[in-house]
Image (cartoon, rainbow, N blue to C red):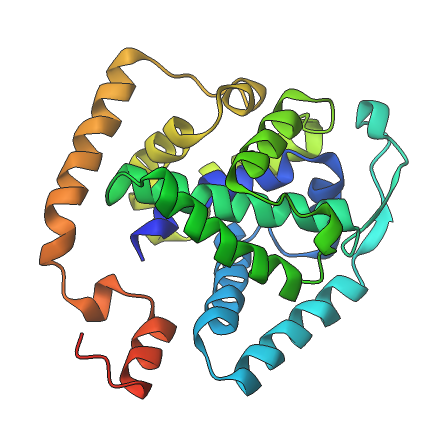
Length: 253
């Protein structure tokens, strides 16, 4: 569950693409509760990964129904993307959103749990490729290896497609200053974590400040989490769908 701490990073990366930002802004109540969208996305992914096949297929069908109606044109104040059409089933957009979730999961794991070896990252990514296929992403465009995946991320972030226009910056404020009261209480810590985990280009594009002092604060918080995490009961620490799957197969954990 601690990987949800990287959820803000994933959301900011997703809407940094003007087409994704337009789809989110035009077709959801994102501004009221951006984390409801993250929760729906993660709940669907947890179901697909851990639940029995019938429930997993139902989750996939739910995503397909939502995506079928998300299409339109990017707002006219979005620079070179102004007026460009978008479609939630666009293969490249699906790949970008998928990539942000997979990359943020690994970044969050290394930040708050433990370092991952190259072999562990490759094994995780190989599993993630199967998930990409289930979400309807064509195998031909899915990076084949972990190295290819990292090259894809670098190319996307460094290129012209990831550019924080007015819509992305507005959505970014909604993410960083979420309205639910419980998130407001944790707001300063959430903003520290999210800003610290973001790639430098995106941090700059969203106008987020960073410093050696904030880096030190994030490091101290991360060390505290890594120390406390093994002491937290599994009922809180482990994703509910995973706990249910363990019980079904008689896992003693």
